[in-house]
Image 1: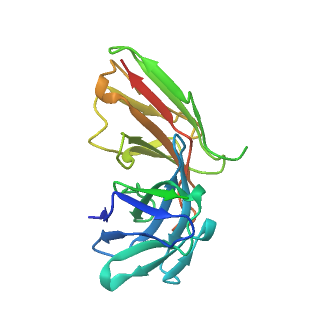
Image 2: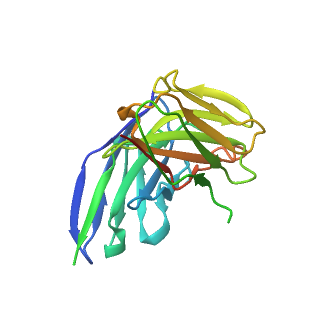
Image 3: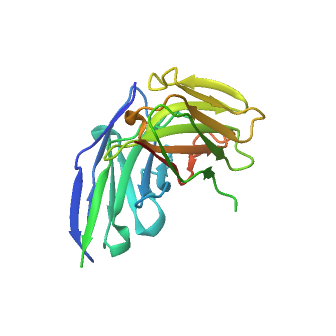
Length: 112
Length: 115
């Protein structure tokens, strides 16, 4: 069975500073992993995905994530936060074709 | 527009009424998923279709909920005798399962408020 833990419910950063959103998963086998972003009252947009190729994955809007099997982690990072990054972020492991299992989400706040 | 669309975007209803939501997936996507998202939580899986076949239903999908995808294109989700606990955002997503790791594309959601 799969499960996912997003370690921080809320992260606050200043504009221009680095962002780290943490995600740990558990699975009996290596899943594919996704990060989605959700802006207020909007649907989810895919940021990036890990599919067992490169362990460092680059996504949209300057985000990237590193898959670490030994730590069962897939943390999301961005070198420099922008005000428009303020949103809810969800990590989701997935076995091909099945439904996504979402974490509870991390709210990212960016102050000027 | 090639994205997933949902209608309506907002629905306010009184307890006990029936409501129906529609989802139009990306045209070449054969898999369609329904999720429910309550405030402060991540989306939770409800059910999914491959073409017109409903392949899996979550335990969250009580007998008052029914979903269809009659021609393998659009889908409807009906909630009968709505309860206040049904208030949530209902999200639809579609996927092309020809790719093993293909992601799901989400619609904007239908926000249901049950008074």
